Picture 1 (tube, rainbow, N blue to C red):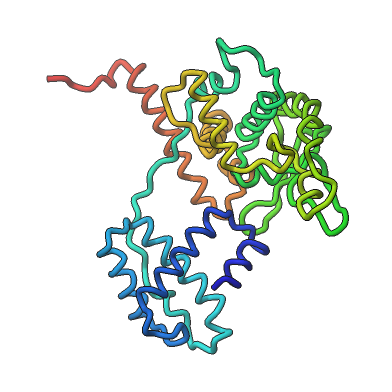
Picture 2 (cartoon, rainbow, N blue to C red):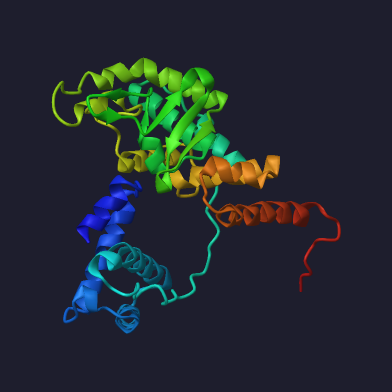
Length: 315
């Protein structure tokens, strides 16, 4: 199981959060069917395990993730173990209600990034944060993709960049889910903010040690923490929440909120679903289509407010 998880991390670049969840799901499976060797698992064992997890109070979304983890593991391992089939393949996950992504309005995104009432970013940390958030909103990156960015393409002593920026061309090359590489544009505000951060970056880079396995990764990374290492996803989350509070936004803002906002606002303006699919790196356009529901909500609200015959009846 650990070999499979290592395969997902190394070859398919699954996020640490997803891998942690899958590891817990695999642990549940072993604990629930402790008397059955893995190569003896049948569809009945998988159904029993799901039923027990449901009885323990797990929600449909968690059960669906567990099934996905088990199905993926057996798909990889069953041929090696000489099993006739994947015992989890025929088990259907419980239906998960599909909630709409939480996107900021255009006005909220502008408040977050323009920082009205606050001084312009001056300190190295403020310049770094502004650059990170501008890139998230400008290009619709996932959080893991953002922190993986290098400030230029680097190939040296066994290290090779997975994602990097081309500032003079106003674009970034990103390796995302499924080990797929795509190019995304960087807006003018993002280019300006990144340029300003690169002027301050040497202050953080000076803390990088000259030796050790992390030295090359840190020296290549675009966004650094105060100790000179590649910034962690958790720091990005904390800094974004801090900025949202300072600007007075009445909503919780997660880095993924800026990705959702990018997609929603692009669709509102361009109405080009295929283009948004490519920029988001979605393998299936049905994943992108959920943003059309956000767009419809925006139009419906405008209709309710503006159309003379749209007013709801009141008692």
